[in-house]
Amino acid sequence: MFLEEKSKVPKLGVNIDHVATLRQARGGLEPDPVEAALMCEKAGCDSIVAHLREDRRHINDKDVVGLRKEVETKFNLEMSMNPGIVDIALKIGPDQVTLVPEKRRELTTEGGLSVIKYEKRLSGITALFNKKGIDVSVFIDPDRDEIRSAIYIGIGIIEIHTGGYSLARDKRSQAKEFKKIKDSAEYAMSKGIIVNAGHGLNYTNVKQIASIKGISELNIGHSIISRAVFTGLYRAVKEMKLITCG
Ligand code: PXP
Image (cartoon, rainbow, N blue to C red; front, side, top):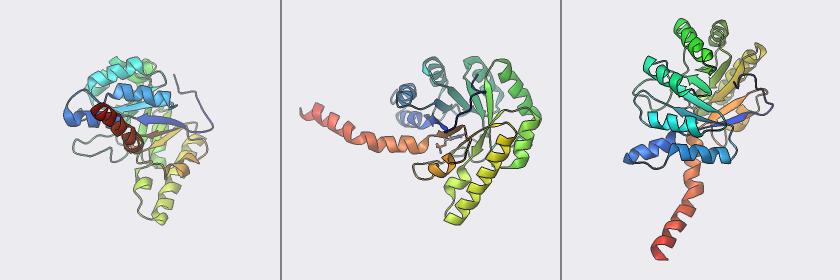
């Protein structure tokens, strides 16, 4: 169980979905998200996040089996409350599940999961996972009522949706979004909840979120994989040049 852990600086969870997105573009075997996960761990990340979507647009069933087998830090499986997905997750046994809303046509997770709306269903699903020693986190908007509802049904971990903050177009609206996140995080922490955050965080906007005292973990995917293309492209071309031109 990772629930008891509390650290002073936020841990980094790397979401490797978009390694699989690239693989799916050709429908082959590379790049392999499991291999990517191992490299992320070697680079010092604290957990690996993967979202098994109902439409399997990137991560697939074989990936989650491989990740469960190979990930040595913490395997955080992001997922909807779909019964079929819940069954798979219970079978796979990740260290943690993060429950998110899921719409088929969205490009990425668009909003937080409403704990208020799904209180009863969430409570049942949480009990199933907890019985197996799997921690449960819910991905929610920075909203006190949602946090109160999460506390009411006994959820110990929340991930605050930072999408509004990262998509803010000007300083004023970003400051407003940041305040919502900070206030919600502090409120939840004051009630003993473990608070994580993520979505849309990148190499410039992450610092402010990381400065919120007591945040346990930041989960970041797209910006890291995007950056990896450019930090790796030079070497990839050099290597191909060497092979083709000697
Ligand atoms: N946390 C959650 C719950 C998410 O749904 C996502 C997107 O899959 C992330 C973090 C990572 O977001 P991004 O890819 O924008 O960094």
